Length: 225
Image 1 (cartoon, rainbow, N blue to C red):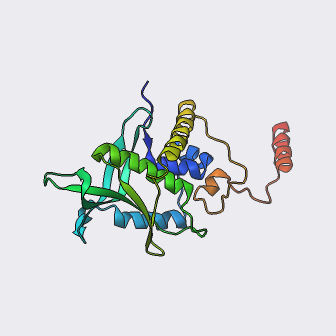
Image 2 (image 1 turned 90 degrees about the horizontal axis):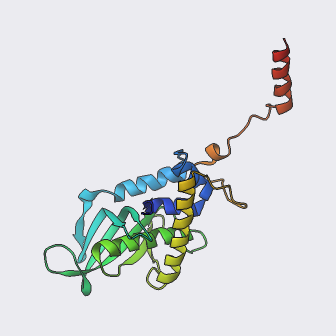
C-alpha cells in the first residue's frame, strides 16, 4: 500500500496544533488573521519564479517545487529559495557542467523571542532538505532568514539528521492515521491559542446573554402550545 502524500507545509501546521491541522486538512476550514497575512505578503515577494537571478557568485532560484516519493516519506512542497554556490564537492545542476552546493533559504517574518528556531520550523526545513536532496542529489545546507531582523540563522539539518528523520517519520505516521480515519485530533492541554487564525472557528464565542436553560424552557413552552 502506497502511503498518502503529505504537503511539507502541513507538517508545520500539525506540530503547531494537531487540532488546527485537523480542521484545515480534514474539515477543510480556513481563516486568516494579522500574522497569517503578514507571512503571506512576505512569501508572495519571495515566491516569484521570475525573480531568479545571480548575485555574489551564487545562483538564486525562488519557488522551486520539490518532492520525495520514497515510501517512508512521500512528501512534496515548494521551497522559498534555493541558493547554488559553485563547489567541486557539490552536485551537477543544469547543462553547464559546473557543480554546486545547494542551500535552502526559508523566509520567516518574525524572529522568535527566545532566540531559538521553533521546532516546527526546523522540521519543515528538514522535510524540504529530504526533498531537495532527493531531486538534486547531494547533501544540501539550510538557513532561516528572519525579515524583521534581516538576519540568517543556520538550521542544523546535517548535524541532527537521524534525530530529525526519526521524529519526522513519527509525525507522518500520526498524520496519515488521522487522515485515514477522518478523525480530528483533540485540543492539547496548554495549547496557546490567542494568536491562532483559527481561534474563532475552533472555539466560537457564545453571547453572554445566551442561557441554555432559558432557551430550552422556551422551546418546550412553544411545543406545548
